[in-house]
Image (cartoon, rainbow, N blue to C red):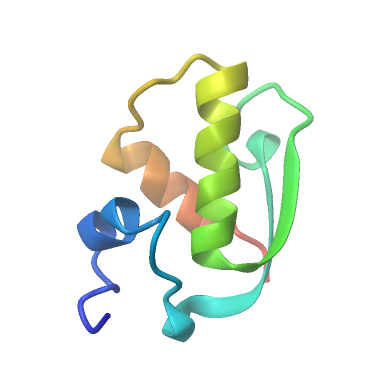
Length: 80
């Protein structure tokens, strides 16, 4: 998907489209964005990491809606 680089489309398509241009190894921890939590995800693509984080945030932190600020913090905190 050519427009997959935009945040909106990345989130809308998170369950359907793998953005090949975003492929890389990445590690994310909730503590990297100031959340007192031991959650850690290590994946090979950014969309996969975001799926794991969104599922974790919804189930463990009761965050039903993630703000753009949180999404940007997560994306910037991914360690490659």
